[in-house]
Amino acid sequence: MSAHSDKYIQRYNAVERLNHWMTAITFILLMLSGFALFHPALFWLTNLFGGGTWTRILHPYIGVVMFVSFSSLALRFWHHNILSKNDIQWLKQMQDVVQNHEHKLPEVDRYNAGQKLLFWTMVTTIPLLLLTGIVIWQPWFTPFFPRNLDRFAVLLHAFCAFVMGTGIIVHIYAAIWVKGTMRAMVRGTVTRGWVKKHHPGWYKRIEQGQDH
Amino acid sequence: MALQSLDIWRRSATTTPSPQQREPIEVAKLIDVTKCIGCKACQSACQEWNDVREEIGVNVGTYQNPHDLTANSWTLMRFAEIEENGNLEWLIRKDGCMHCADPGCLKACPSPGAIIQYKNGIVDFAEENCIGCGYCIKGCPFNIPRLSEKDNKVYKCTLCSDRVSVGLEPACIKACPTQALVFGSKDDMKDHAAERIAELKERGFENAGLYDPQGVGGTHVMYVLHHADKPELYNGLAKDPQINPMVSIWKGITKPLALMAMAGAILGGFFHYIGIGPNEVEEDEEEEKA
Ligand code: HEM
Ligand code: SF4
Image 1 (tube, each protein chain N blue to C red):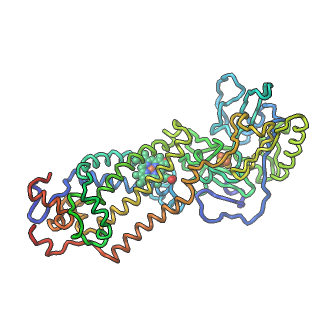
Image 2 (image 1 turned 135 degrees about the vertical axis):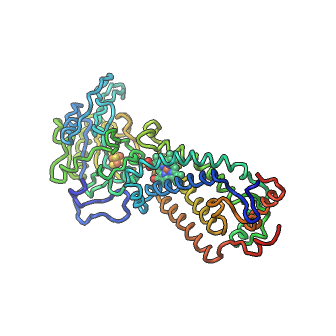
Image 3 (image 1 turned 180 degrees about the vertical axis):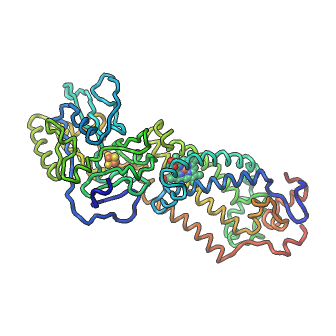
């Protein structure tokens, strides 16, 4: 791809970056408004949305926007996230991962196994959040569902939100931890050294002109 | 009605004790279905006292009117025609909030102070704090709270907490012409029920008994039933009502644990950064050719 220069390699184009941040902003708003109702210790977060009632009203609409935005993002990145043999080995060496012993790890392509797992976690939980969210959406939809399904839906919604919340904490931390990553989503480019170090498999393909 | 009394046993979505210094007596309403004639005086009195009115409905071949509890009808006479021991029986039950000792509605509610359980046992909704999420509806094992289409707040029987707090009996009690409805301390109501049950047994209703279900810690609205062994006969009164296990898991210990796990993840990240440090690309790694 011609967007690569001597110093930088293009990782995300402008549309991908906008799509990512659209998803991220709506996702954060969902975390704040959702967890406000999750436990009394976090109810103060409703103040950010104009009170409890506004929080209850806004959350599901933001959810629908997030779902649409995420779906587009997921389709764009889907084919990069197919798990490979190397990924299993990578996961077994989690110890080396957290200790920054990257040279001991199997060759990573465009995404490492941790990134891929987070991707698939999102691909399963976000549709579940949408479906369960619709069931518990008052006053529009809840009255059409049996009471026990409503109870199950709110339990599953809270559980998926917990899984996603924890996943996103790891996702954000990874971007802080691995220096030079943030600019991939902000500017679209990363340095050649960053790619060689963290994604050597991808680097090889770029050099061979196979990257897309 | 949050200002009328400071004697609060529990308050929704609140993790510290509410003002509960004083020791009021526990109250109860006793509904003796064996004395009820289905006149609905209590239903009318409820609407009159609480200033709510039901829309005029249509008759679908039963005396039950309206057909269900609504945001305006906080109590409803439910009529059932059943055959028991070869006899046709017309069972009439005054339905409404049971004022559970362990209220599922309050457990489920995410909004601080939207549901209040007074120390006298009354469970009251404070609509000004209600956010309209409908969680209490999921929590209630008796299918009682109703979300209003007008304001998206939930409504139900208050046990006339406003009247009780100034020493009056609930409006329904005052209106009942047969004394099928009585009100007083929970202990007195149990004693009164025991006398009635003994009488009913003498008259041949050997399964007569009191409905004060322990699965929800007992209730502050109790029934005297001729068929206490089969409460389902009375338009599906639950035999052993309990807060649904899905609600208990959702609102139980799992939430604080989930919060701790998430806080742990944040803290873990911070300590990792301090202890092991970031993963950086050194300058020489940047320069060396692939
Ligand atoms: C995908 C579309 C989504 C829809 C339609 C949706 C809908 C809802 C609805 C209707 C509620 C009930 C309260 C309310 O009405 O505001 C709710 C609660 C909640 N939502 Fe969502 N939501 C979605 C996505 C998310 C996401 C992505 C998160 C966070 C990762 C989230 C976290 C929560 C939490 C924590 C609660 C409170 C659950 C509880 O009280 O236990 N939601 N959601
Ligand atoms: S009957 Fe339902 S609404 Fe009434 S106190 Fe019990 S759980 Fe709450």
